[in-house]
Image 1 (cartoon, rainbow, N blue to C red):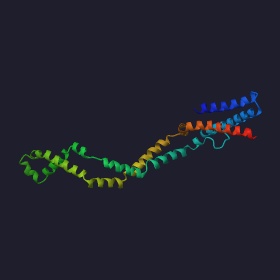
Image 2 (cartoon, rainbow, N blue to C red; image 1 turned 90 degrees about the vertical axis):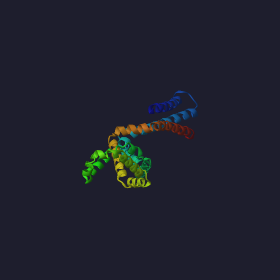
Image 3 (spheres, helix red, strand yellow; image 1 turned 60 degrees about the vertical axis):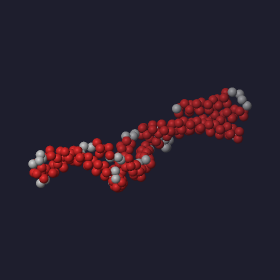
Image 4 (cartoon, helix red, strand yellow; image 1 turned 180 degrees about the vertical axis):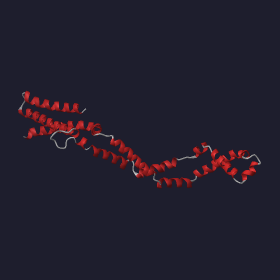
Length: 238
């Protein structure tokens, strides 16, 4: 955690300062320890304050609490990232083209019940001028033997249609020119907007903290390290 790394860094810097004051050493060594400790402590504390100011509002310090204050901008940035990088019109077009290649209607046709089609045909025949004549030979029962041959022929004809290259070309063209892509884009955008509207400044702050926590930890550590190096160099120059 941030407090652990910052505590260790600050403690080491304080130890350097304490040794410089409490133990009798040659001036050059005492000065080196003192400057190293002071600069290291200054660098670590400065970075620690900067990290704290990212997420928390500090009175009289302009720019502090920038992430909670700018959470609307963060929400918009997240939305733009999703819509511009993951859900573009081109990507949806490619998706539909790939899905169109996978469409196989044959199993659906094989399992479909074509009895309503046959029933509609027999009703049409019986309602026609042939109905009276067929009534003399048993009416609809006389046509019952045609049910299975008719449904098999109809299935075969439909499968021939849906497996033809012309059918797939027409389907692909329809998907390209239909409003399906636009409707899907609007639906996706609506879902993203709805979810982002549920975000609060606190949620955004916690999300960003979680994403960059490890980098923030090392920011404090390296602030102390570089501060200490600068302090050590300064002790020999001044």
